[in-house]
Image 1 (cartoon, one colour):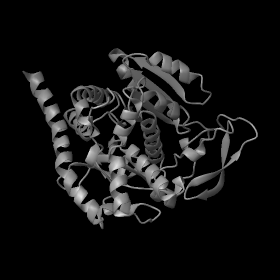
Image 2 (cartoon, rainbow, N blue to C red):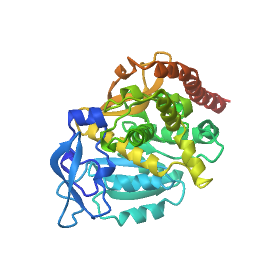
Image 3 (cartoon, rainbow, N blue to C red):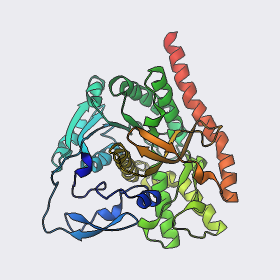
Length: 390
């Protein structure tokens, strides 16, 4: 089984223990990487699920036992797809990595194939090879689409990325109907409802297996809170709920762990920075791209959590944008979910109880915007279907 695999530079080989995943949600942690040695191994001593590290005496790429899961990345030659592919290539839970894009994927495939980890890599180029890229996939990750540019909102991407996601999800429904689907392509608030509608029309919809990847909001919240309050980064866990754009992103600072007091000013500043962090990166790159590296990191963290769930790991939790009844008027909502062998085992709504006054107001304020984005995605598929009949 995949759980028995061990690899260097791994973010999945930390034991899954209950208090770790409730606090930290994922074993994917930057402390497991080091520039001072080419290889590190974990000891049995853990603090909140974060391993103590010791330098190994020699470089070992992988020990006995290989991963058992096949992952397909659709959009693998893009700004997110490339670094995400590298991170997945290092996962001990993965046996095969299929890289698909409309162009330039052969170079990425060749480059990754030189990394001496056990994951087998294969490249697929163009629509005629899309079906082959999906054959036997356990998880399909979709970062395909155009990135944000300065001055663009996530909704500005809709007209292009909506069609891309629709086409790719149709292929998933046809060729990998049982796979978990991780949607990264923005605007996630709309592209996940698009994916759901496409799957329904194909008779392949299982709400337990469709995710909008909002882990980057959690990663940013953890980083910003740790820096603001001087906390060890590995100790911080901030749930982020709502959606994945602007003010629909709601970090629940009152639920942050470890418990810490925030001034009203800190709450407002941190919330605004987390909500606008994508714009911060877009502007800093000055037209050269969007948040690609941090998104790849977050997507890899979420993938590892999903694979641990598939592998039978106990108490595997992450925040994700999924079909939900946590907020009755919003059919899709980001909150913490429990991951298992069939995808989502539980959508956790308890963190929406006992909100601060600021958070309660923000939750009410985001509802109309998020509902409009959901409706926009659903309407898009309906309009496309009607156009195809005319």
